[in-house]
Length: 426
Ligand SMILES: [Zn+2]
Ligand SMILES: [Zn+2]
Image (cartoon, rainbow, N blue to C red; front, side, top):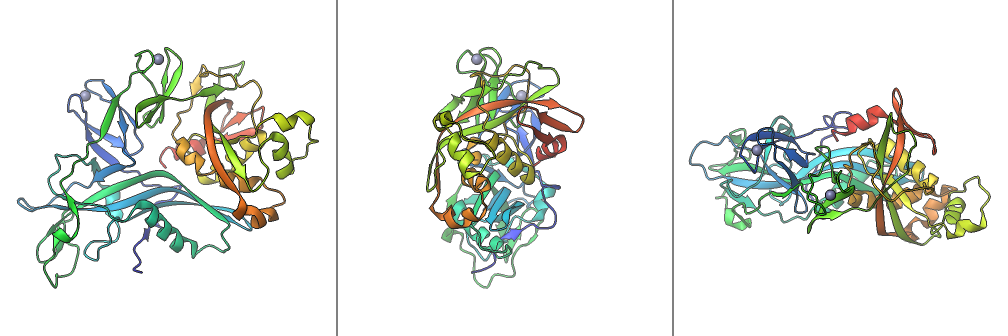
């Protein structure tokens, strides 16, 4: 098996992540714009029209070429994953921020990864205007992730009891090449391969012209027609008129169930969003609050009515560094906020939702392993435990804005503001 993954160990990290810039044109008036790769809500600086970017499974980008005229371009696909990997080991949970790219088609003719040059370049969304032959990805992303983890895990002290990866972005990047005596890199205009022993047969790699176009949906409330609002990286948009929240789905915008813990003093408060997930757990009893007190060995005397209080998984609906992510997930799940949750959007400052529920769902089993006491149980039981999500709620909790921290006094949770601010880049 060739070594095909490049783990970009040195440059990007949680402290120093790569954030691509994307050259874009306003779909309404054609004005140029530069986007961050995390941007979803785009407001044109010229025509002021807002639109919301929607991916079909993942975004497809291309690197702009500098090839001489009359060269027929071949675009080779690479998967790119940026996110957090949590590994549950007997000694505890290890976290790691990774940013990797890798061939989406196995080929000895092309580089193994996009390489670091992509940091310095602006990308574009793939659209039918891009002339060239786009090679079709034949290695599915999950398969590559599996291979990557196999290599990654060689460096972990085993046994690995459980592992989850939370993708902050999974995308496909097409890099341009052209074919002569060698395969030429059309970004740098220099050879990407040694001299070809036999003619390169492009027809052996399935593909064709680019036939995707980025989808935009208008940012109008499907309920009342008002303009929806949100931060540029918001995954959930807010209608201030009818007080509803919306997220993009295959059918367009779909409504999100929202609740919040009211705060008498809204000044100096920010509401942080959390996903509250109800799941079916098998292999261990964890259905009620009484079960939680038992499995987590909380220092509380179980009250009879606790049997009837359902247990929910909780996790941040916002990006935050891996260590804080884990701590916060654990703390909030132990706290089980449930009293006085009001079933509507809070009034006041809200932090944008920029971690999708689909990724939060990936952490359920990890969350569970963090709860179990004594820890030794994890090793004995983990392989028998299954967690299946059933439904979710977006719940906002008020945090006091202090000098360095955001503090949730009821549950005694503090979040360092730096951990939030910098995570915006992740
Ligand atoms: Zn415009
Ligand atoms: Zn509305």
